[in-house]
Image (cartoon, rainbow, N blue to C red; front, side, top):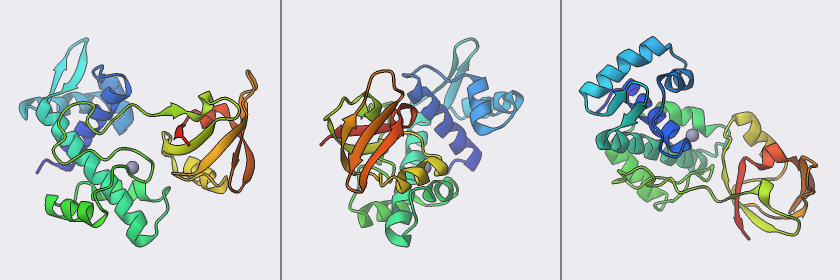
Amino acid sequence: MASLTVENYAKTIYQLTASQDGRPASTGQIATTLGVSPGTVTSMLKTLDAARLATHRPYEGVALTRAGRMLALRVIRRHRLIELFLMRTLDMTWDEVHDEAEHLEHAVSDLLVERIDVFLGRPEVDPHGDPIPPADAHTLGDGEDPPPRSLADCGSGTGFRLARVLDQSPEFLRYLTECGLALGTVGEVERNPDGAGLMRVRVAGGSLSLALEAAGKLAVAEA
Ligand SMILES: [Zn+2]
């Protein structure tokens, strides 16, 4: 089993690459995301290179090998299954589970993950709507479908179902809960006037205003 640090690097490089359409991550980006110095990243990249998990080309950036991507997807799979497991079994809320999963994702065995997957009925998405990669996922894109359309882009009268939350900070998630917005919530756009920076949506609990910046972090499906 790879070390906790190696797993975190693989996951970080994977998520940075996925967030920029497959372009390699830079050492600076990795350092910022992990909160370490660029020098630390450079020496860790040598370890990843020796383990054939990532390659680092000067001026191009860091790319995971196929083995590196498989490792990253296994960690992401564990993380997302653990989040859902904690919500379903311990009644934790969607703003509480991420931090716990950050630790547990390195500790659970393949057997335990498989049991959790079966227990949950082989779910496709985690509590934030992020897809759970299948156990054998290995290519970039597996389990990382492009997000559905953003709520901010929906015009007046559009019916929607909240499918995925792209900002998963606990503060933002708690705010959504206060607004009556949860994964799967169905609603309708009342008004989305051009240039107002604000939209009005109706959900079961009533009608509420959302800044377009916040609505832009909500991916919706048609309802
Ligand atoms: Zn998480």
